[in-house]
Every structure is written in structure tokens, then in C-alpha cells.
Image (cartoon, rainbow, N blue to C red):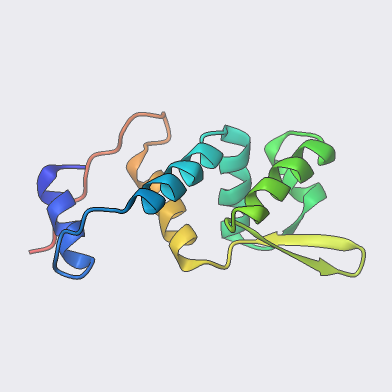
Length: 124
């Protein structure tokens, strides 16, 4: 992110650059720590796209149902995904618009080959 873009973002958050508190920094670091696992990040990305049961998520990510369930439990406790019981199935989705924006921004910033994508032009 360019310095100009960072300042534009800070200005959008209330017009004043307020330094994050210790608890905010700790919570943000914990969130990024959870998302540092490619499996968990993939699960959150899928849950942000729609509503899926654990079996479907496990198959899409290429892990066992037990592994997916373990990761989804951590993500659910952190508030990154929501799980709802529908009959015998547990359905996962992302309801928090902040998490949706975070996931969208992560993948807007990274090209399909894993390199950083160029910044789009700033609005004038």
C-alpha cells in the first residue's frame, strides 16, 4: 500500500489518524495469525462466497472433514465465520461485513500467481 493510499484510508476512518490501542493491535495480530494458515484462509474465502456445510468446505479445500471442522471451530470462536445448524448439517458463512471487506481486499492485493497486484488508480 502506498503512503498516499494509507493516508487516504486513515482519512476515511473519521478524518483523524488515531493510533490503534494495545488491545486493538493484539486483536488484529490474532486475526492475522488465524488467517496465516492457507487452509483457514481458504475456508474463510469460501464461506464469504456463500453458505456451505463442513463436508463441502473440506472437499473444496482438500482436507479431511475432521481437519476442516477443527479449523472452522477456531474461526467461529474468533468471529470470522458463523456456523448455523440446519437439520443435521452445520452450515458456515461469513456475516460480518468487515470480514468480507478484509477477505476481498486481501485477494484484490494479491495476483493469481501470488505476486502483489498493482494498486488501482486513486479516485480523483
